[in-house]
Length: 233
Image (cartoon, rainbow, N blue to C red; front, side, top):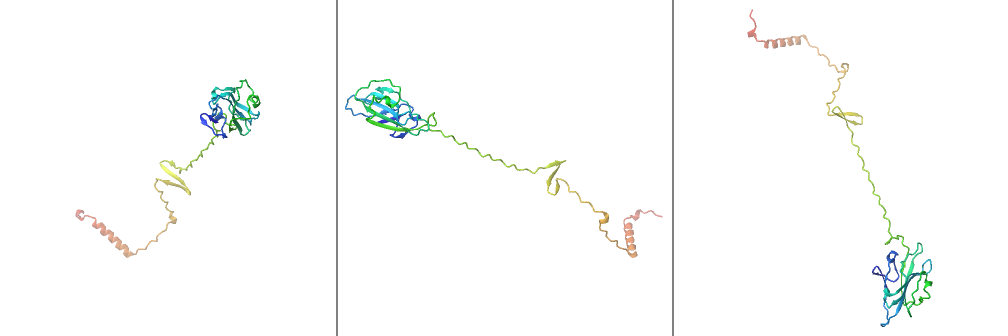
């Protein structure tokens, strides 16, 4: 027996999610009937259901391997194992009928409802897969929330610039020990008081030196005069 969900063949004892098995599968099998028209029954059930052995699908009077032309006792219902009940087995059993079964209307999906119709203890072929409660009921794989990575915000270190104040076109910078004026002429130092100035001693001059100085001054004065223009007596 081969089982296909959404066109994909599954392996015996494979694990499938309820989302992957929510649609009716395609079942294929071979029957060695030597050209005889035999009838078969197919059931799918969950022996691990909390409600007892639960039937998910039941078809009877299948001509050879033509499942589409069989009589549906219970329409397909996909697996939906409840929360915290672990893995469930979902079993497909194929039975060869000895005669045609009268189609009955069955509403109860418990296995006991078909025991009198099908000899469930003698399947000709068997297949099973596992499934479990799916946290993300909307389908697909369980979605994991992406951890939001917080970007590390780096604060730029603000460099303090030397603040300068301008007073009347003069730039003054504050430094340790006082204020220094830039772009201005240096202030001259004040002269010390006269009392603090060093006084040089006065040299004494003799009479002969005084006469020589007077003669030099008189000669210099005479040389500077133009005698040609002097008035005559």
